[in-house]
Image 1 (cartoon, rainbow over the protein chains, first blue to last red):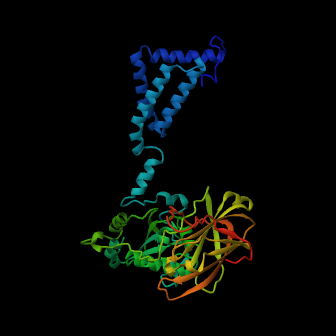
Image 2: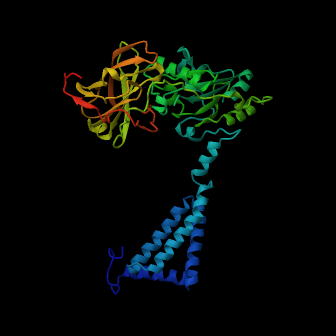
Length: 174
Length: 293
């Protein structure tokens, strides 16, 4: 990557100076010394997880976005890889993954995962409609007026299922 | 579900299993039926194999009810006395059905324990050899296409599953997979002593693999290059015998393959081949038209 974006370090541009300034501000705030250097990334990983919950996206995706953004800014400012910084990034990534992976497995307040888990369970008193609602079916809807067959091949009208409760289960041999 | 049925059938609750197109053809050797009679046989076989007493109703051959009710493989619905849906799930859950019926109809005293029913799944398949013919490994993604079996003098002992690659679907030029499966419902097998099966595809002849075993029920598969517009006419010629060895005869079945995707064809879970047999059978051996076997 350093090779691809190599340019003489003494060459300046307005954009490069801006990025360098922003990076330096962040670095000065976060890394006054080497101990806070790694602590920052640990805190960053936890923060990413919490923010991801709020925004309803995967913690891993959120952190990955942050790492990419930080990495891009750094590369733009210096245009070569600094071993210390990359080591810190990878360490923080690993820590964030360790934190985020079990959290991702739990139902989240936002997004589709918790809905799928809840809907699969259904539960007494609930419709348990889950994916069927997405294909135009709804509780309260009449059965389609279709004539199929009974086990002897005689006509069987679905509209005749009235007068008492009926349980229908779709299935096949394999 | 059988336990729930036994508890609630006397409480004015009807139960039905709705037999639909196979979700996973080739499982236990079963393939999609070609006619309503065969689908009724499937439902009967399911009832016997699963040991359940819940009555079966059978969807139309064009799967109207399945399409109208969500196109799921194992969905369940509770319908009220007014004919309206009161509960629905895209995957059947007998425990939840029981809980729903407790709420809607009322509890039962001494509910049946499913384990006490001692139900065992038993497909009671033929004893003819299986796993003696290597399965073809298709290269790339292929999609099931619609087939129509034309009228034959005998029952459709063998079913065809046809799949086309993207090129064939798009432009009429590409690879066509033809899998001929002996239907276990009819309890018939290939007679290998009379020679390998042969097929013609729009007049071009192909020969299936030579098999050492005298009889088997493995599928015969071909992957051939096709450059043709739909429909594609396929003819299968083979010698079949019933499993009771009361008859053997030369049989011919004809199919018409369209290049229209069959959304009800189901998904094959795995194609595990046999380790024995003779010749890899990859597409068979092509014969010159009019050549003997």
